[in-house]
Amino acid sequence: MEGIEYLYELCEALPRCGPGDNEFTRCAFFAIANPPKYPFILDIGCGPGVQTLELAKISNGKIIALDNHQASLDKLMEQARNEGLEEKIIPKNLSMLDMNFEENTFDIIWSEGALYFMGFQNGLKRCHQLLKNKGYLAVTELVYTADNPPDTVVQFFEDEYPDIKNIEGKIKVIQQEGFNLISNFTLPESAWLNNYYLPIEKELPRLNKKYQGNETALGVFESFRNEINFYREHSKSYGYEFFVMQK
Ligand SMILES: C[S@@+](CC[C@H](N)C(=O)[O-])C[C@H]1O[C@@H](n2cnc3c(N)ncnc32)[C@H](O)[C@@H]1O
Image (cartoon, rainbow, N blue to C red):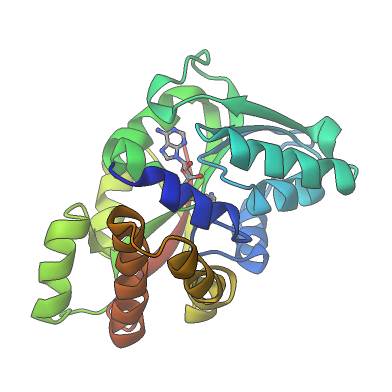
């Protein structure tokens, strides 16, 4: 992607790289009625790892934190050291498209705002292979939350994310791929704004100034501006759904 370095620079200045909140990471984790006492967890597309750190605190588990952006893994491990959690987290710089773990390895796989890089259905398939029998998968995924989203919204996602479906549509895919749905809930607007869009809005003036005259960089920042405006206008029509399921 052209200008990806500017996207990374923006992301590195944010608390997290997508919508989410520790409160909902906890809700999803505690939807698992009987997690193993010491689960082996894979966090796919962990980014700076806000949810990884939370999982380390609440799970007693060992977590492989996988991302293909080293700076995010460094940020995660610095925070892990500050919080005395580094023994519980193994950073792994690897593309989720090239995961070479043995089948039936993990008790729990986690992925907030990232599984779609593999394609939702394909990602479910891969996680199914990597999970132990009866293992758990928790993911957030973009969905239509309105019964009849307006044409503007449908057109927008035809370009941006054609794989978007309503919640029932995603549940069908989950079942097709051999999972039982345990719980699902929609992230509230606060999870988009407080930890993601408001911090982006705070950074944009500084970055626009820094890269004055650089059209590629300004184009990247402008697309975030547009995405945020679009969300503010249409947040009743789409959102992130947390799906917790069992193999
Ligand atoms: C939207 S961010 C979500 C980060 C984090 N889970 C969160 O909620 O803050 C998506 C993450 O996926 C990572 N990513 C993108 N493509 C990837 C790939 N092919 N393999 C591994 N990680 C990838 C990005 O570097 C980024 O950290």
